[in-house]
Length: 180
Ligand code: IMP
Ligand code: MG
Image 1 (cartoon, rainbow, N blue to C red):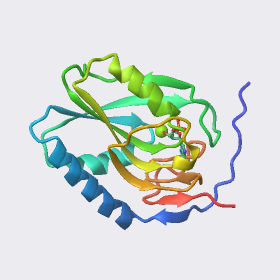
Image 2 (cartoon, rainbow, N blue to C red):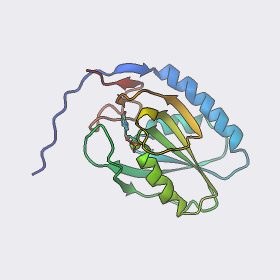
Image 3 (cartoon, rainbow, N blue to C red):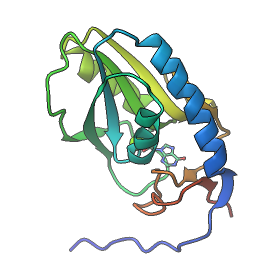
Image 4 (cartoon, rainbow, N blue to C red):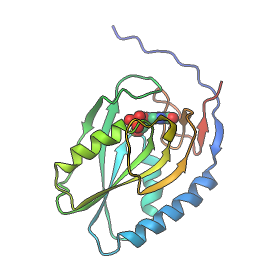
């Protein structure tokens, strides 16, 4: 029998307000609009963490584009990644000869993204770039080139705006810290 671990639901302390996120996403959207003009762009959101960021980001990009999603999950409710990733939902269409922009919530060790880049390369896209809302460089185990980055944060566990702890907190409108 599988017993679900009980977690105490604590209030998250605001790190980035909805206003701050909106402001930064407008800038990222403008940069992406400038860089992909005239290109066949597919924006690929990594589920589940990127779903809210993705929805706001694509509306800040003033170009014809397609969206797709890749479902990934790492195992367990731990607050650190093992680097063991499972594809739970594949892309709905081929990406060969398309310019792919991966949208990810956060890059921590970088192991998930390293795996993902290798996986997408086998599908022969014209280019692959990364847009990540957050990066925790203190925890990096591999060098990941983030073309469009929202914010750099210290090594703290954050939740909200799509990011979860044990499946919870994704629906917060802001990014918060689960402090002691
Ligand atoms: P990485 O493989 O260590 O770079 O981990 C990336 C994934 O771990 C992210 O896509 C998140 O799902 C999860 N993750 C890492 N840090 C946090 C955090 O502070 N809050 C919520 N999820 C996180
Ligand atoms: Mg994620």
